[in-house]
Amino acid sequence: MHIGGLNASRAAAIVAARPAGGFTSRASLRSIKGIGPKTFEQAAGFLRLGLDAAEPLDATAVHPESYEACRRLLAQLGHDLVGRDLLEALTAAQRDAREELPGPLLLGSSLQTLADLVLGQRLEGVVRNITPFGCFVNVGLKDDGLLHVSQMRTAGGGRVSDPLEHACVGMPLSLLVLAVDLPKRRLSLGLAPEGPGAVVGAGSFGLAPEGPGAVVGAGG
Image 1 (cartoon, rainbow, N blue to C red):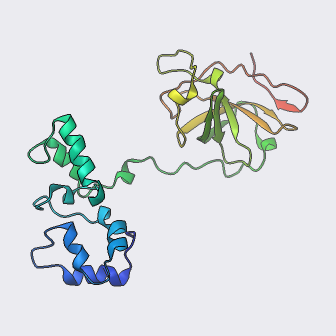
Image 2: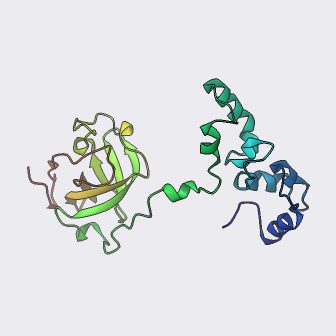
Image 3: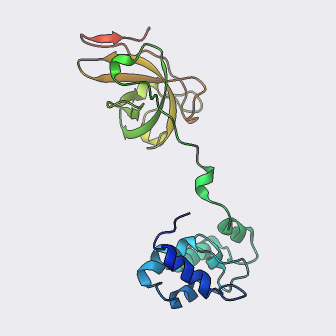
């Protein structure tokens, strides 16, 4: 695992300087040769102490520069740092939040151009941009496809008026090819049933191709 600001020699210096009972605070790392202010700033958030640390936040992923902001927030919420479940949630000392993220989305590696697509083909994609009229989705091609707002539904099945309220950049989606317009290099997409992105559901696939060169279209 690589930690920002540390290299092999600095990591070795930390291990060599570690007292028998372990470090008592993150701040004590500053006294180690090679751990200057910039290195400490980069690495401190990844170096955590045990739950018995004098400073409870030293055992969390909260960066030292954010300790005061964290305390102010907890005070506003009426929480304490010690003796509450909140500390356990903040700590999760061995948890890497990245482990809770979905695995990498493998887009269609066999796809080369829009001409490779066929009507009704199922694709996996990732939202790259959101506009008032829909989401532009990367399906592994040079040109992104458009999931029009008319093809989006809320969890309750209602129409979506603002895509920004129901989608986010990076959201994975299972999609169906509705139409391809080769001359204009446009790809129209619909949501596939039971795909990822539970906040929206499959709409009626009614986006018919317009203009010459629409090699596939959606049935009405």
